[in-house]
Image (cartoon, rainbow, N blue to C red; front, side, top):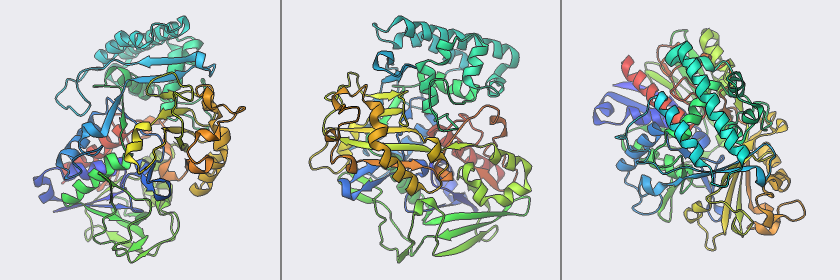
Length: 581
């Protein structure tokens, strides 16, 4: 039996474990062990509950799935079909877990409600997890974009917005035609040498188009601001990769372009995935942090671990909350006999003990599903032994992000929002994106529910980018909340209290809200910067015979920070493992 050791329990690691254990035949041929620091799966998508805030869901940030995420949704469809989970509520089925989102609002460069675009996307046949539906070629996708985009705008959309949409569509069509004549199917990779805005300007886009709300929204989606400052003409995004995301987002989706989860991402994705993997025989070992990988120059020979707990055998990390299976705020101590102190998610110690796993004795193959932004601390041996691997790590750039969740005693319509199902991006200030996640409240534990729930996210400002202590950085964000949320006031005029957000609009005031900074190397958002994409390594091309890579930081079908990129990579890593057997 082939023994595969997966390091990291985010989307890439979980997808690799799922693909390696999906059938009875695979489970007889492959033994899978997944190690994970702390007591939760999920990586940047991990969530837990706050017992002091009515079991409220606490996220790393704002997560939405896109309607073109076919590999990720296909995995979750299989997970939900196999899961012996709740029979009602948002975990009963994939259709209960996700709600379609058709509307998105984009703030223009003036940063005002008058300069805000309100787009409504059409409902199209199917759902993203329907694998039987047709797929499009890139030429068909561009054609769909050209036909669909003008119709997304309201009838009363101002002339400048219609002019920008037409100019953007023309520049994309003109540029892709030229690139395809020059490079054929490889054109998107060739385009990655340039930033998307620079590429559009080369192909005739005006400054009005290059700094427009649709492009700002795309850069916001990818946190594409390596210096930590967002703006209408700031940021860097590899042109080919970013353009594929833009085209897919509005021209390749099924059902709806965006899909909101009706509970936390940990509840929706990682709780059912964990229980299905465990039922299929995957050995998930919590409270074990990778501290080093060793190599003889050809293969990974040893994996060193730091242990955060004792007595983890048989540990079940999930708890029941009403109709849900969830990750608790505090780790379940049964059967843990001892638990380390400190930030267990940070995976930096102190550790209770350490151990080493050795090739031949403990594993045959390793799937490394920890982002390359953290490899400098754990993979120095690999970097020294292989120049291509070292170049991949050195050209992988991550940016720290910030997030907040605000529970409201007044609904957003009472506060002055006049749109529907709010997802608004392009705001000025540290939080550039806001989504109304009021639909998540029934999955929390409120006896007297708030009237609304707002999720905010953005790229961390430069002073936070330099921080390494997540708890200190998160405290900084919490202190800044009263000032940072001023960016909402143009769209929430009913909450304007002399230039600051009215604290009485919040359940339990500012102390009752949640803020977080994601500054640890493994939780920084991996960027797709111009000139760096060629340094990415494919899941089966690490340069070491028994090492496979999984995550959105690898060379994959998406090549951008996303659930789909991570799952696609994890599945590809599993296939590469099986092909090497």
